[in-house]
Length: 108
Image (cartoon, rainbow, N blue to C red; front, top):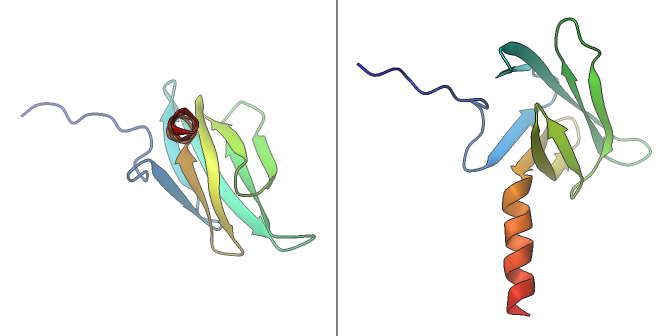
């Protein structure tokens, strides 16, 4: 039986990754486990925060996230597609968003 391929983002589906509010996700990157947690706030307006932590390294926080923002998580770029209060932050592969924008501009 061949080895199973390693999937970096096991929760990603069709280029989208739904980070549930306060649910920790673990991603392997450069041989180390990274913990990703999303939080969503209502004040002053609805926005998200994604915290990426790895043992022995300072945590990285992306705060004030709203739809359209881009973030780097373990070496990959993601675009924030949605932020739903106390529910989730939805990410899309940033490369896909750039390709879509390029194809739209080409057709103008």
